[in-house]
Length: 200
Length: 315
Ligand code: FES
Image (cartoon, rainbow over all chains, first blue to last red; front, top):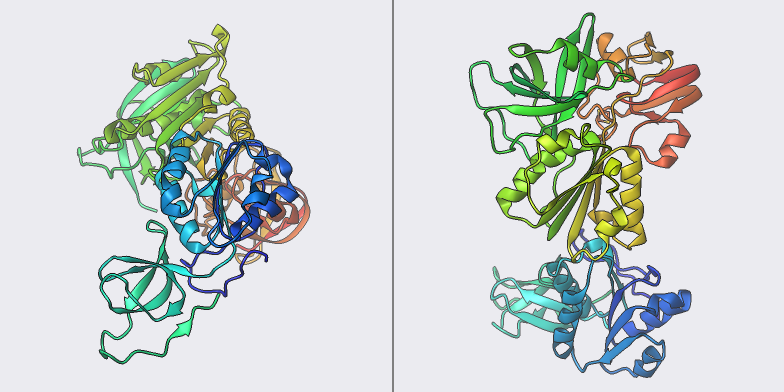
């Protein structure tokens, strides 16, 4: 499964491309689920990219771990969730110097959160690459209560914090690493459009 | 373009080749504030010719009581710096345009590394004050050939973050050593001779720094050259550009309307369409893409020249 192609949308909707090797330089690689295959493909194009790589993987429901580990990064670690991986990821960012590249691969929830943390740690946007693979579920912030609902696959959806029915916008906050959800029936309470699967 | 008549309040000889000038409002009015890296265009009436040269502001960006610049005399230049050195003295009126900044600090950076060569120290003198005021981490490296030539020595404060590299004293500036091991979030800024800028850019690339953290300003003054003829399709004029004149200055002398800002091939304001070109454009700007340059369909009249049979411009 190649990098997901999303239909053209507003300017703030992130777009993704195939990862491009920046050579045998210090690298932090973070992937979840099918994102592992993006890293495997990257190494197939340039094996040297692994020479100084620190790889972190969250398998979700996949079994790519063994193949990813076999790529031979000097440091490889698996975590059951992004939350479990957070401390390790932040330590890697804190230890990084200029010249370190960040490769992200997998779901938008992972990419968005990791990118927000990396930018906050000082990494330049030009040093970060992201390739989308796997689920197109979105990490949504409710613009009303500010609560974040993970893995949203339908539009509209119910905010897991305040219970409002939210319209899934393409507007993305880089700072929060989340899409914005807006009350869908504010003017016509109770009149809610039919629920649809989110499309790429 | 807003400009005002200012008065030369101070002239100080910093080195045999560099003078510092201070401009103030004749009635003591406050001048617009600026940000570190900004420049002003100074207008000089040199006999028949009106010269406009851009100079980085070196004074405190938050101090509106005056503007200060440092001018290095370029004897092989077109005459602007020679005019400043030989014809301008305290008390003279000079027309100065409002500051414009094409070399601003990126305040998203966690740390700023400033690398200057020679007179390229000027934009950093104002940035230094801004960084100090904002209490942002920085280091400044200033390279010059010798102590006698280093005008910056008189203008730089003594501080551990400020390092002077004098090649004559065997202390050459090494961009690779400066950029190695910088913390995440560092931006690098360089201004000086082309060789230094290329050296810093190469080192940044070699160390895998992303392009968006590299900032440079080459002091581009229009190079003199052979005279050439240019025909303007809209105004129906044919002009000759003199050896010591830029194409932009020739257009201005002929009263042809043309926008400008930096007069140094960096801002893009003066971009002009080429209708026909039989010959070779000597592109000296940092604005056009390489492909645009080789296609010879656009020219930046503030710095670029022409050699050949015919040049037709859409002006
Ligand atoms: S005036 Fe700025 S590029 Fe010509």
